[in-house]
Amino acid sequence: MPEQLSTETLLKIQQELDWAEEAFTSGNVAKARVCARRAVGWLVQSFKNSSYGTQIGENFRAIVADENVPEEIRAVAIRLQGGNRAELEGGIFSDEPLKDAEILLNYFKNNLQ
Image (cartoon, rainbow, N blue to C red; front, side):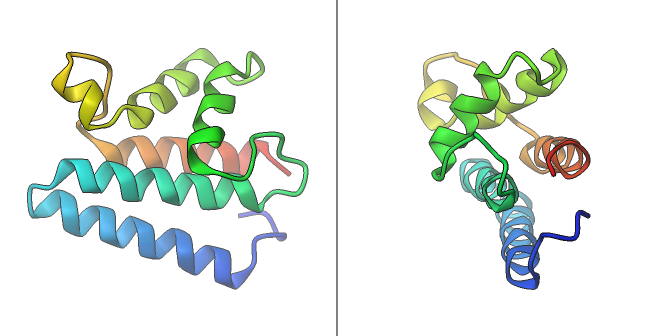
């Protein structure tokens, strides 16, 4: 992980992932998605050179719109961005939020400095 990530940020990310796993295991996929999004948001917001904003919704909209991000990564962001409304209305949403968060976290750990 890049050096600029503080211990506090790392702990926040891990806590969100732990909560996401707990929620997913108990069958609350919606809560797991929320926690997974927050984990990604904490990482993205921790980079000083990030142009992805300072709020989670803003982070995901910016990632999806960023043509410099590979299409497959933007597709993961679209899935994880989708919430209960998307699920209820037949939109795009993640049914594997921990996996999707891991993909995004790994990508941004390696590509934001």
